[in-house]
Amino acid sequence: MIADGTDSPSTPSQGLKIGIDILAAETTMAGETPRWSDVLTLAETAEETGFDSIWIPDHFLLPTNFWTGEDQRITSIGNWESWTILSALALATKRVQLGTLVLGGGYRNPALLAKMADTVDEISDGRLILGIGSGWVEYEYRAFGYPHDHLVSRFEEAIQIIHGLLKNGYVDFDGEYYQAHECELRPRGPRQGGPPIMIGSRRPRMHRLAARYADIWNGSWSADVETLMPMLVAIDDACHQEGRDPQSLDLTAGVLVALPGNYPHRDRSPIWHQMLAGAHLTGSTEDIAAGLLAYQSRGVSHIQVLLDPMTPQGIEEFGRVLEIVHREGSPEEAVAAG
Image (cartoon, rainbow, N blue to C red; front, side, top):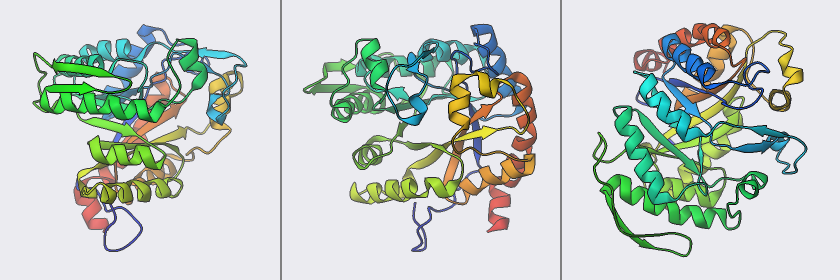
């Protein structure tokens, strides 16, 4: 969303929303593995604390060094299945939006996925955001028997089916990888156009698919908005290439946040040790809030926080950050600051 001839996306028209990404995986809850009761407690605490949304990652079995971009199995981290967790949270929560950050495009038949999304949107009374991408971790794909070739080409076909069914309720598609002949979504969920589609992308071809089919774009993970800026500019350019007004595409970003303190699990937990070795946002309550609000000035309207420690106490402590962000990131404050 480039405005005024600058390189920065324009300021959003609504207040900045903050969501939390709950890692339902081994060793992710301060070194412990969350059971369903723990995931439920984390979600209920997040809703009570004032988060705007709850997000569930979509993984099955990850090599511990996946965060570095390597794809060799050293040891593995198991994850609870995201849609099952999300379906339960759709009933267990009342206010927050619910999303997937993001689904691996090759893990589910696209017509079935559209059906699942419309159903969860019904259960949640219209609170679902369908986050989806092409997927990427080869070890995980192969471990569960999914083809890992031509990921973006497969996604390009899948998103046409998903978009057609959710937006129009009908699709007739015959592709190289997927088929959906005279397929209908019936009955429909609470929203005529279905839940909004969020596409996570990093490269030009996926950017163009996001510009063509998404309601929302996501870029993850970063520690400051300047790191994200090249992708924000790229998605803006993709909209222009597709003949779309960039203002019609909402921008979201995943941000890794580490609360200050000496937490022993950060050395014991392979996933946190690896993630926190890279760039992350930390500091005082005011520092973290300022870092998140900086995204709003670049056009980002919704942030998904990956928080450490991922515990009820950590979530409650982050509530002080939420108070500042919701106060200073309100539309009135944004206008006054501008």
